[in-house]
Length: 324
Image (tube, rainbow, N blue to C red; front, side):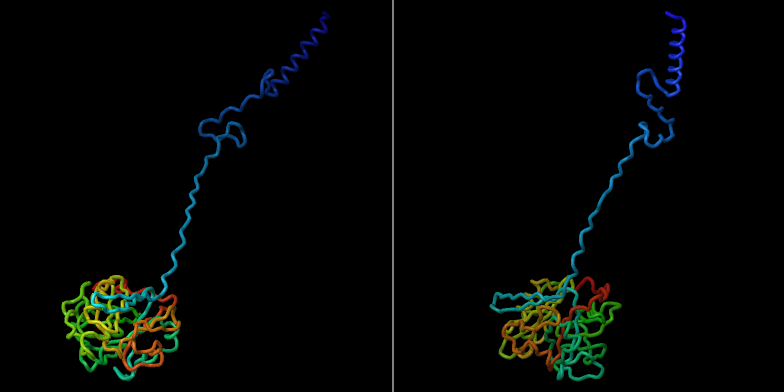
């Protein structure tokens, strides 16, 4: 072979080897992998030696929708007692307020009182129920205070329905847990000793002669009101019953304490509406007075049950849980 040809061949191979070395080639093999980064040094972005991104766990918490606020309402039931009396029971539920009204004849007109013998205006638009008060004040079985005005002296030891300035009601024994310290007493209606105490009918409830003069003997129209452990008021009435009937029915419906209200057919009355401000209907079968009696005016004291205004404050602490 010609020596010049051999020299050219060797020179060409040498040049190609140098070019390959400069380009990082290795005779016929793929490009070398970049060296792993030194300990503590991050790998360049996009290189094959970069660590994979760490997955982040995302916890999605779905909040449950808040339950709708309780609505003011009246729950009506009727109970037939062992002796045959038909008792109507009304439980006043949800955010409600109470107002004591004086009657046109009893207690009668008094200076400075706002809640008189007629339900009208804004009170009518919130009216959910209305029921009778207690005995005539001249009978002398209880005191009477309305809107801060004492029309008949309050007496210790008697069952009392107390309404504070917020409209919350409480039943108990005056001078024995009532009034509650710090309570802003606004109105009080007293009537006889308790009919139910500590969740049980009192021994006196069995003697009908202790619970007012009647027209026609033991079985006459009677009414009473109690309060359960949740603080809800419970009204009970019948056009023919004895005191023990109302006591047992109220206790069986959860009343921790209860008091008798008015008796005899002319005075017992309960009227309710399906919604605040709605049409009223008479609830005690056989009651004498029409459902709109308290709207046109009445001679005796009575209570109204009103839907609380929207956004009204929560009951004060002493009213949030009832303890007899």
